[in-house]
Amino acid sequence: MEENATCYLQILLSDYIKEYSRTQLMEDMDVWGYSFRLGSALAWFNRDTEEVRQWLISHLIINTQDKPTWKLRN
Image (tube, rainbow, N blue to C red; front, side, top):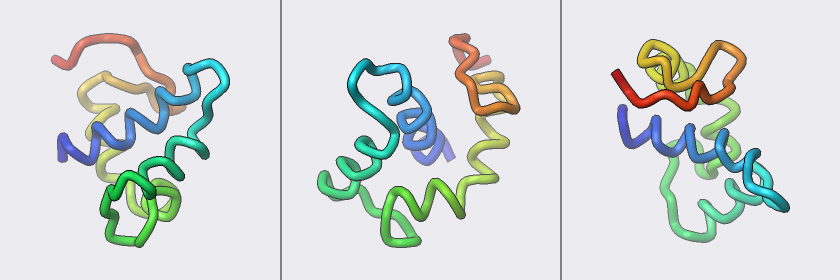
């Protein structure tokens, strides 16, 4: 779960990097060889992340709007 949470959080945090985007990050993840059940980072992010999203919310790492809380994990 934590490995998937790290991938999900990376994607969210990419929005905060100047001149970068989550789209670019997900394309990079595919090029780097990240392996996702649905074949790509984009497909995984859009269709297979509800459990990991809830995990991040429950640990107060992101809020329900998918915004980082900038807090350390409890």
